[in-house]
Image (cartoon, rainbow, N blue to C red; front, side):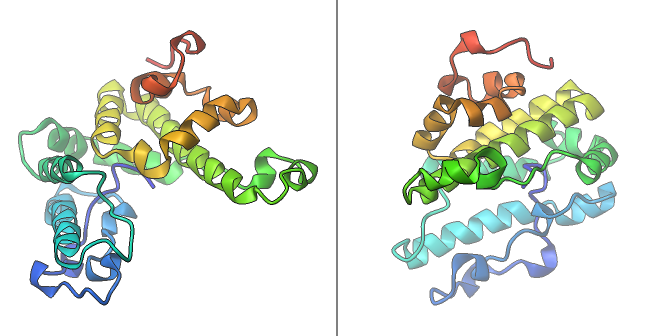
Length: 232
């Protein structure tokens, strides 16, 4: 998933009054279409850019109405919920840096995302031999969670590096800001898994090449002495 692909098709927006507590929240609040794609034109972008804000409001209303006993809350806190609303509102607000940078770089964003080579086959066997896995004595689930964390971090770090190279430093900085404000790292990884990832030399070596991302987005988890100059 890429952090810029965070739009929501207007045709699938669910009114807040339509909340059905017998449904999963993502059935009551359909997944934003632009988690899947970036619009090709500013006109299309403007038609869709209120979607994320509506999506977050719908999820917030679902949790307020139905509680979170049967599923894990998507919000880390009330501040997280309010922060997401603010960020997603700025997607559409003309004159904000976020709106300006995205609308001025739609072609570059599209070309970069559609042609990117970041994703890898993130499986146990990508990082460990069969013998290694057998020696884990049934603890493969914990390892899978750690590798899921790695895959999410690797993909987003790789994409921001490509955006920096193809679209410029300002786009990269906006991407970093979005990653921080939307709690993306905390969404894909628990703090424990992040620390375990950095303690595992084999896994850490996969993402260490993106030291600029590590320094700017995950600095609190990483020893500064291990980081180079990055790709400024």
